[in-house]
Amino acid sequence: MCGRRADGSAVARMGDMDMGYWGYYVVAKSGRPLSRLAALSGVRDILQPLEERPDGWQVWECPGGGAPDGAAPDIGDMNTLARETGAPALFGYVMDSACVVVEAAAPDSGTWTACIGREAMARYLGAGEDRSGRDADRAPAPDTRQDPGPYGSDAPVDRTGSAGTSVDGEAGALGSETPRAELPEDEAPEDEAPEDEVPEDEAPGADGLTVEDYFLEPRDAVERAVGWAAEAGTTAERARLLGLLTAVPEPSAEQFFFRFLDRLGVVPM
Image (tube, rainbow, N blue to C red; front, side, top):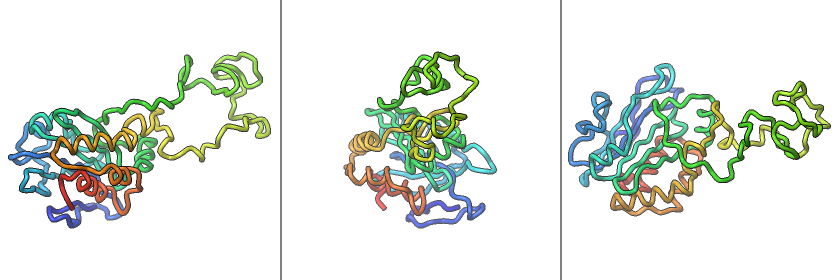
């Protein structure tokens, strides 16, 4: 696994080299070391300084999470940290070097969440492997999300009738003796897309929720990020942020996170 030194170079960490990095990067502006702030008191003993800039911006690391040691430390919420410092703050929780949970807050504009590496995040949600130790603030569901109707999401879907109606048009109870999955292929609805054609970042997780339920859409996240940067006294370009939030994070998600900080203008690379 690898982290990052204050000069931006990679630093090896203990563990299986085939396993990616798991852990938090906390970013805030303060005249005191972040480890001395009340908002981060719960992880004070394991925070490690990575970068401290003359203008007060600091990056600290809090490694943890991933197999076999389970959940990451509870680092607290960024709204509390922003209130204490009087300046914007954010964290990035890196998951196996594949994706990043971003939570950001500012005294005036409030809290928002974003995701770097949406396809990889969808896989973790589907496997129930979000080990950040806390639920990300859920963004509003898109207007295009399908309404499950009065029977809920477990009702069979009939594109030509209502939920709870059998495929031959006769009303039937939920859980009919002839489930749709057993229909002969030549009787299956032609407009039903195969499961493997569902975009990976839209596939539901174990609880039926998708990446879009937990995180802002990339364009919405960009708008919040631009506002966050303005409150931090910097300027962020929308196009560059959008490109980063919609790309596959290669070679690693943690490198993309530091590019994200660079594009916010707070920790230039």
